[in-house]
Image (cartoon, rainbow over the protein chains, first blue to last red):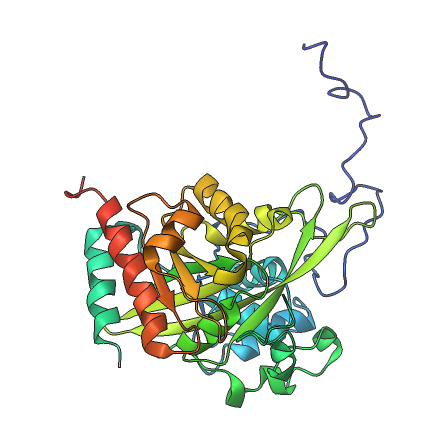
Length: 137
Length: 228
């Protein structure tokens, strides 16, 4: 028992607002539609430059909101980064990450990190960049 | 000072195809979501990198990005709250003060399967949390300066240094602005001897590519010789 921690026992524990079963009223913009979760699983893996591409699995209407389907539709013709999706959809990057994480979780999108893990910023990469920049028309 | 015509007219972004704030209410087939206006990545096998282009308001950040970008420059509306600006705290609770900041960006495909994203980030200190978030993982920063108000770039350089990001200074030559030698500019900007300084016209493609080369060369000198 740790006397210093209030609320660790008994039914009087107040659930955090927004958690399932919590009674706190949340003012969530409709477009976020993140299902009341604080953070969808896996959003930490997303970056502005994470590359997204649709799979052939269309998100079913019963499970996903219109924003999810807009993102999936946007990506039907090709790949874009998270930040480009956000700009084209007129959504903040954070909201786009929520939507993308949901769709990746459901198998409707594929996501790829901008720089492969083994290829962190190193001399080889910068040297490649310099050669490329000097070759630009 | 702001009455002098600048290469970054304040009205310029209005002419761009901007996503409307009420886009969420528009049908999914709206013009900004149509496949015709979206420039998709040519392949998914490329390495993507980002650079931050920063500096005081009106210094030419968007102009430089527009000059270099292969796509019409895009922008996102980034929401910041007074308490935190992390990805998890953007629900817009009314008791927190929120600010919306537009962040312009562009894309430049570089031979060798590389794609460089250029983010124009506001240089004001109050945007530091947003700045940090965007700068995370960036190769480096271009700090832009205007010879008529060099001191406006000081807080921006402080911010970049605090972030630990390698940077080069790009002095945008505005028409009619006084010309100075690199030595004079370096002295007035109080630059460390190793910090690159490039004078450019942000509307000129070769000049703008030159600023990227100067930055990349500098980034290379700061990396360890041997891979660990």
